[in-house]
Image (cartoon, rainbow, N blue to C red):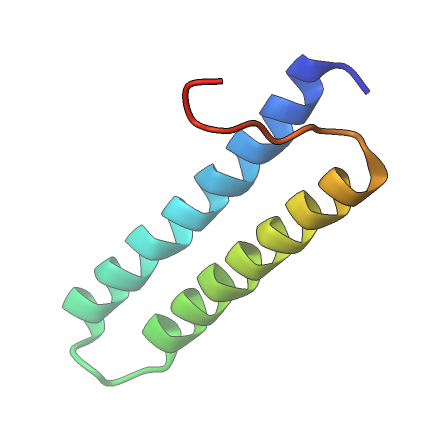
Amino acid sequence: MNDSLKTLVVIAFLAVILWNLGAGLYYLLVDKGQSKRTVNALTRRIAFSVGLILLLILAIYMGWIKPHGVGA
C-alpha cells in the first residue's frame, strides 16, 4: 500500500467524522430535542473515531505505517 493511499484513507475517515459532527450540530439546532437524529449522528462520530484509532493501531502493529517522534 503506497503512502498516498494511506493518507487518503485517514483523511477520508477524518472527513466522515467531521461530517457527522456537523450533522449532529445541525440536528441539535433544527430539531430542538424532538428527535434522536443528534444522538445518532454523534454516536456514528464516536464509532468512526474509535474505528480510525483501531485502524491506526493495526497499521502500526502490522508495520504498514511507522510512527515517529515530534521533530524526528
